Each structure stands twice: as structure tokens, then as C-alpha cells.
Length: 317
Image 1 (spheres, one colour):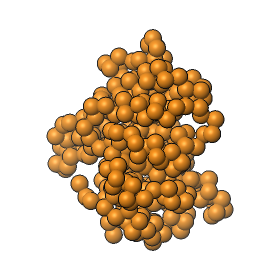
Image 2: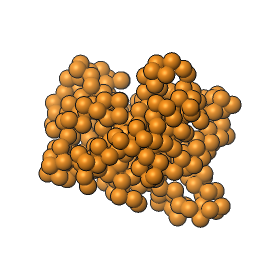
Image 3: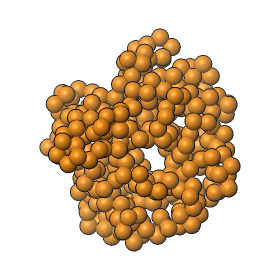
């Protein structure tokens, strides 16, 4: 694994021909086709650790099996991510052709995000902890260790934490929930945030190795992080070095997103400048870089691929 890992966040646009072939009502064959297609794009871009294609609703895909169980504790045997079966098949077929092992990342929606979406903004300690236990089961079942594929990163998506001012919680309850979510997970453990205002809470949370920060769109988010603090709490940082906000990019370009638009607005040179600034600020505490967030909202696969490719080139070129 390189000193600085280039990885994405998870979601990626589907091809137009496969738009209707996955999701909660899609067939297994349809989901396999979508997953294989997206993984091929990601691998082609040169990502060190591509995340599995999150093609379904980030809340519903986890809450659907959770809500069927009393007090929202899903049995571990039922906490499965359907897409991973097809990722593993893709990796095996690739290994048989090339001999290359896939280093895989898995994104899982965190307990705070699920709670806020399904139980409201006033947090109950017990129910939040139950959700964390369910999330932990999803994390455990996401670990693949085969000669053709190995899960090397698990990332908790917590975009509302530190962003939504309506959330009412005790910080110790959040820390306990996040620690429980990652309990027993031996690979790299990352949390993906959209803001940095709860950085002290994350610093104090055990079982988190990497703090993910959106910084290409909002560089000010990095102002709340310091190399000394990261070292003090033994944390590394993931910095977003390429913008994923397709609406902002299209607004600036006055055109729909395309590979050509990406090459102008998010060029290798611009992304490299952000990468070097992050290196200067964080030194050896910079462990992961990539796009700010997922690319599922992009309509053009070629454009999304170009962003990943430019990000890889900015770091490796």
C-alpha cells in the first residue's frame, strides 16, 4: 500500500442502459451488472482502494433489515450488503485474468445518520447504541479476506454530524456509539464527515483511525485540524482534494458535466495544488485523499471517471 492512499467515497453513476437494473426491486442479475460495470470504471482509474458501488439509498439499504428487529438490533447473519457478493465475484474474475488482488473499501451509514433519519433529532442513548450494534454487524460482515479480494478500509458515513444544528445529543453517547460501530474491526477504520465542528469529539473516539474531511469544496474545514492534535490522539486524516459537487461545477462552467468540463474545472494541476497543500499541513498524518464525496449524483460516467483519474494522476504523476 502506498504512503498516501487514493480512494473514493462510494457512489458512482450507473450507465444509462443499466439505470433500472439495481436497487431494492432490481434482480440479482441486474445488480451484478451494475456493480461489475462501476467497479471496472473505478479499477481503471487507478484508485488504490476503490469503495464498493453504493447504488441504493444510503439509509434504506441498512435500515430495512434493522427495522424488522426488536429495538433495532439486527442479527449479525442478517446484516449483509448485497453488492459485496458481486464485488467479490468481479474481483475473482479479475484475479483469474490478471493475477491482481483487489484492495476494497466499504462505506456503511453510521448510527447517528440512521438515527436522525428514522428516529428524529433528540437522541436516546439506548436506541442509538442498538443502532451502533447493528452497524457493527454490517461492518463485521463487510470484511472479505480472499486471495483475490481483501477489505482494507471500512468507512462510516456521518454527514449530519457537526452539520445539522437540530441534533440534540450527549457527546459521550455519540462517542460510545461510534466506538461500538467499529468494535472488533481490524482493518483501517475511517469516518466520513461533511464538517469539522465536532473534531474534538472525533479525536476522543477510539476505534477511528482516519478522519475524513471534505476540503476541496470547503478548504476552511481543514482549519480546525492540526498535525499536533492528530499525533496526540493517534489519528490520521483523509483530505478531499477534488470537488464532487456537480451542481457547483456545472454552474461555474455553465454546461452540463462532462469529461471536458472536469478537465477544466478539476484539472490535474488544480487537484495537485490541493494535495501538496494538504501534505504541507499534515505531513505523515495525511493517509488518504480523494474526491470530497460520492459521485452518484453525476449523470455522466465518463465525467465521474475523469475526476477519479485526474485525482489519481495528481497524486501519482
